[in-house]
Amino acid sequence: MSLIPRDRRLRDLAILLGMALVLTAAFYAFPDNLAFATRVIIMMIFVLSLDFVLGVAGVSTLGHSALFGAGAYAAGLCAAHGWNEPLLGVVAGAAAAAFVALLSGLFLMRTRGLTLLMLTIAVTEVLGELANKFSDITGGADGLDIVMGPILGVFKFDFRGQVGYVYAACMLLLVFAFLRILIASPFGLAARGIKESPARMRAIGAPVYWRLVAIYTLGGALAGIAGALSAQSTSLVSPAVFDFQLSANALIMLILGGAGRLYGALFGTLVFMSVHEVAASVDPFNWLFIIGALLLAVVYVAPAGLLSLPDLVKRQLRFSR
Amino acid sequence: MNTFASICIDGVAYGMILFMISVGLSVTMGLMRVVNLAHGGFAMLGGALAHYGMAALGLNFAVSALLAILVVVALSAPMERVLYRPLYRMGELQQVLATIGITFLMIASVSLWLGTSILQIRLPASLSGAVNLGFRTLPADRVFVIVAGIVVIGALYMLIERTRFGVKLRAAVDERDAAACLGIDTSRLFSRTFALGAALAALGGIMGAGLLPIDAYYPLRYMVLFLVVVAVGGLGSIAGSFVAALGLGVLDTAARYLAPDYGTIFFYVAMIVILGWRPHGLLGRGEA
Image (tube, rainbow over all chains, first blue to last red; front, top):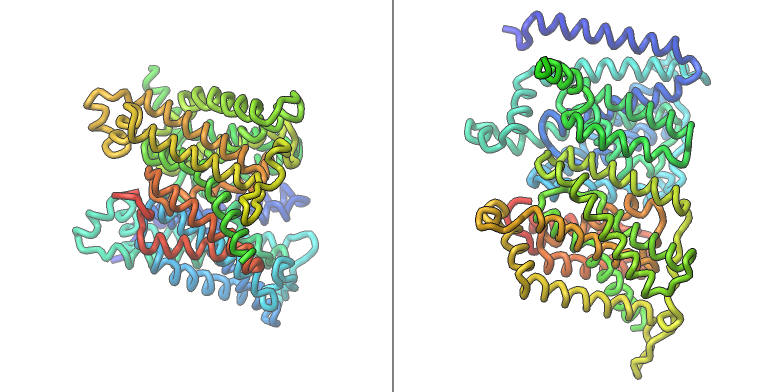
């Protein structure tokens, strides 16, 4: 018996195909903005990983950049020590971030609510200070400058960022497909169950704590992939990867789009980063007005995120009829 | 010995500032169950208004500070009514998103109004010298901050323990619904508590301008700092906030004096240890 019903599999394939089409269209539509598009894609991977941890499993965290940073530094250190094949760096980044998530998760997953939020921030800050402090390994505040080799020894990163874009886009599709399968699996069901009610999950015999540690570790690995990609595409790793702002922005993008359904992560990231980019270039001093107003409007009008808007409109129409 | 004395006085002064700003956050979060990331914004608004009063209107420090606090209170009441009230019934994540949005709007307003540079608040001459205690001299501004902090704690203690408002507040923090059933007007209580918290934050922002310089990005920069105090002290606990603020203030100052190149690492490690030991904070109870 297969875990995923056949029609669902077909739908997933159609969705992936659609995403690939959109990504391809964007590649040809914005040939001069590929660097920005690549940043958006990498951020999408990061927010997807946050969606799995926070939206699906209900672990509130404001320290997701700890895992992003771990991935970025792992990839950066690999490249700096001669292993500059990018896919190797991604694997190293995912492994390092998973390791950090496992270690911190063993402690973090015992707490909840505000305490958990604060502890995740603390872990991030401590890692950031360590990256600053051990400057002979990490390059300190200046960070590491890295040079990436060609992907699989064939595709070289070019100045226009075409290879970088395709590389990141493929990773996004992989991560998205992986998460779709994962969420439909018994493990994903357990994650959703824990979000709904940890007490009931415990009552039916699920080892909630160990599930959470596993979820956090897995989410960490995905965040590490995003970190590694970011390091590789900018050729730089600095302690800024551990910024609180990065965690907070990822959270904003996720809630903006709608947490718990992977499309929300993609859509929220796209909207937030586009508004940010456009507003900041139109008026670099007052763009926070626009972002702030956008966030408030979403919370008061569509608390479940932008993706819930069509449902809301439909319901309104039905009522008014 | 001299370093030790400096650490003590700077650390305690810093702790007092942290207490003034965080206590309102702790009580509102304990009472209304709102994760309010915009609380530091009231401290910034207080500081910005005090700066404006002194620099542009030529008022003296005391008048300017008082007016600034009054304006912050006047602003916070309608904000609570319009922006925060719908949030009480929403989830944690929506609260985070909305209060970050409010923070952004505050930052944008202040940077539009006064720019993004540091807003100086010049203390009167009588506070910029040194206080002679006979056996040693202490910087007057730090002593002023500490004395003000002690006055605030005393006043808060009287307010919470000895007035009807305090009785209602304690009742509502412990059991909000039961308090409402007993005829306590919780919505008015919310407004007043919120305004009180904003006023204390404004006071802390003005007094602490020498330690935590006021500029437009203040609420974002120190957001985590204030939340740490609340989490370590325990939600809704005034005494807890005091102990946490003082302890973390002294610790952070000591770390800056003794091991400057380790940055804030001690601060956060201390927080991890304390929250690992007492997940609900030093004096917090029940679920956060």
